[in-house]
Length: 486
Image (tube, rainbow, N blue to C red):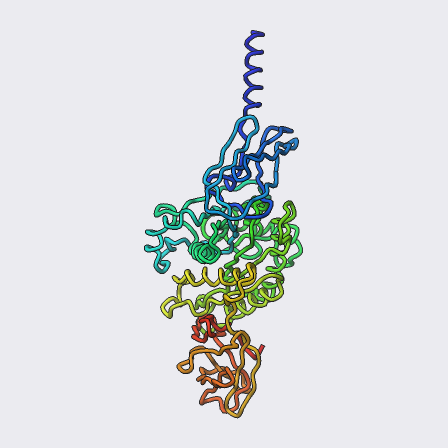
């Protein structure tokens, strides 16, 4: 019996000594690591055990770290210049685990609600434009693009791990990749000629408050965490998306160690009606994200990681086509792009078809992704010859029965010259009427007027829940919706 006990004990000890390290799914085959920085590799091992990490790109250089008393460990590994050459990483805690087909490039974190989540396959009677072609040819990008999609995982307490493996584009994987993220990655790899990795962490219908931690939510007078958790959590159906906190705890917090270049944010529909809170709360959320994704790593950008957002698309579901709640939220989104450092907001007003007025998921995702990429390329990568700003309202002057309007980011002019859509004017009574706009070519301005407003006072452009405009600058970037009667 003693021999049996001793033998069993020795076997158990041997098993412990030879135990494989446990890695989060995000640290795995096919991943993309941020180039030319110190990237984090982390996981779990035996308590107080030394973990050795060996990388293929540095002639077999190894890095060692000691796990803490709970077995948690994290080590920062220097990465080289981006390359399309697949690399490998071996991690050992007595028994080696090798990660294969690893690329070094640029890594972006994409988040928000359903228009970011929307895959190439489309949503519920809502297709993505040109999706079948993209899916059929997706393997062309296998050596250039990788994407990890984080499943909806709501938790009441902050988590250390979450599901979500890196996928290589192919006809059987591409249908479930975020369409906006896909097109962003395409434009980025074409322009930078490096691999691009996307971590898509989105949940349809989620609010800003869903991606914000508890200590901050406790300061918001309109958020009662206990009541909202009780009312919406684990009840099934669609309303779980409305719950605050749980996306941050279950999906974002577990990924905070991953080294990324920046964030893309396509969200806002769920915060319509709360436009006064939107910009400051988004700013606070961004500050948390930047701190969490930079505090344990030597990131070149520190806690100033880029954060770019997209305005919500026109939709009559915000309270009728002529309502203002959606327009007010868009206005707040552009304000957020101004008050958040190293940020900016792209316009999507022109990317919706008239028949999409009743569906919240427009089919055009290619240009949304491209516009995100153009902003990142211009502002983060310094490629200033790539424009990223559409015209913005600058000033106006009443001239008799017309209002002349000038714009920023239109130094080389605006278009179209005629058949302009989207303008309205109002007189002293504040009632807005559809207006005609005529290009003043020499001034690069529009003369706006309406027959039934002889003495105009204010002008608006696409400032409704659903109104599509067609004004663009010299690079076909759209005019930002605005009002002068704020």
